[in-house]
Image (tube, rainbow, N blue to C red; front, side, top):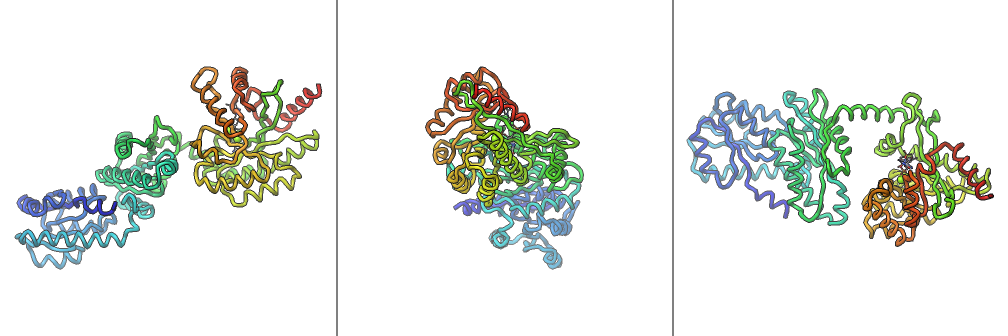
Length: 564
Ligand code: C2E
Ligand code: MG
Ligand code: MG
């Protein structure tokens, strides 16, 4: 269905001839059946072809023209990977020119003075059909849904543009759909595909005026490589509006990152940076456009350094585990109930590096598992030590990142952790961020189910920051919701936030799970949370994350209070 619609659109043909009368004559013969463009010499023809490389179907080319003649045009075309697939029909009065033109790759001839219109029409449509067939053979060049270049071809063509057209100042842009998996999950795959297709169409329309190329490189990521543009906000708006018109009843948000042309930077790196910029505005619906800048370059250098230094961080014991207490606030006075293990990196030159800086970085490439395994082992050892020293257990929660949850060895590793430290499963709790549940949900659910059956308590971290729907929630194997900090921050001043907190508590009650409020900093927040029935609190109000020696003071204080 979709394919035939595309074929039915009139094909675009460029007619290059310096004599107006000839152009007019061909217009009369071909108009109505095709969309036509005109050039008066070879140079102009090449320019127009580059503009329309995405949608031009044929060139009809006069051999004798001023400025640049037809032979030269064909020579240029032969060298140009992006244009050489466009078939050329040569216009000539000179029979002897035919052989040379053929050798240079012409597909057919139209002789002057012109044949009867039917002959011209037949030649044109036959060549178009032939070239259509050739295109099918090289279908791998194109993405099936959008008709844009597929990834490998796109990268190859971009690198050729970069190598052979140094005069062209090309920008790289990456476009992405927010939460595309949810769009698919809620509205169905077919709808998702239609959105991709609509975006593809609009990108083609845009790119054809920019001498650029575009690709759907994967799922919902679109890459563009085009002549420098002054206003990407307008470009993004244009595509966003096309999507809005396509699906007025579903809200779909696009975001875009751009790396503007810089001398000598290869397309792959340009596109990487555009992608990094695009990631920075993930979830930022107010300002979904990011242009790569100096600050990001500094960040990139920093990231590279951290990635480099991680190995020595582990071997040289720069990583330390801190503990932040969770208090049960429905008791009076509040009772120390457990702790969360949080990683700290004391870098010899950079000082204390915050996990906010390196955790997302290491999550991006799977290295986070190395950090996590270290934290789990350290936490388990610590729980064992405290159990021996104090005679009872302070359970510790550890964080699991997405990479851990998808690791097939996870369950065995955690079983070993418990057994080697002679602990019970309930002594170590597992915090899994809400966003880990949202894609490939079935794999995640299966793993979490198994862990829970073993006896691990599962806490859903950052609840409210992801996009779990209510019906998904009821299937999720969890024991505790950790309410995201952003809900607590303003409860003293904002009615809306307070109502949201109550709503989350209602959801938790409905699911039969407890709630931990994170980020509690003031007495006032504590009071409000206690009044609405929140069970546990973690936050600076009680304590910041502290090294184990200091956490022991909290334990000892707790023991003293209980005895008194
Ligand atoms: P999280 O798991 O949600 O951890 C809670 C974060 O909130 C901690 O930040 C903690 O210091 C901070 N916090 C606690 N109470 C308050 C408060 O009252 N006010 C404010 N402003 N902040 C508070 P931290 O330690 O910087 O960790 C940030 C995030 O990094 C964590 O969020 C977690 O997602 C990740 N992370 C930390 N350690 C690990 C780890 O060992 N493995 C993995 N995978 N992620 C970790
Ligand atoms: Mg956590
Ligand atoms: Mg959290």
